[in-house]
Length: 85
Image (cartoon, rainbow, N blue to C red):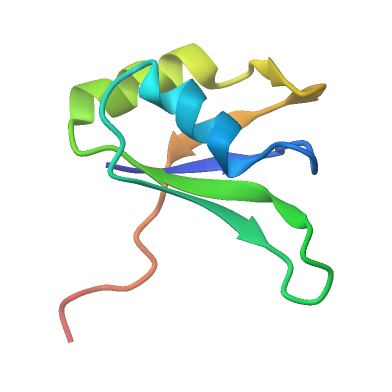
C-alpha cells in the first residue's frame, strides 16, 4: 500500500521516515520529495509498505503525531494514473 505523508518539517530526513515506518512493518520504498532548485524537502513523502495490515497500523500510529515539531498527516495515497486506457 502506498502512503502519502504530509506536513513534514523541512529538516526531517528520509532516514528518519524509514525508521518511523519500519517500526510498523516492512518498507518497500520511501521517497522524500525534494525541491529540484533548492535541494530542500517539499514537506511531503511517499512510503510504500507491501503488507496492507502494516500500512494501516502505521497510519493509525503516525497520523497526527508530532515529528520534528510538525504534526504530520499520513493517509493512503490516491492512485494518480489509471492503468485502464
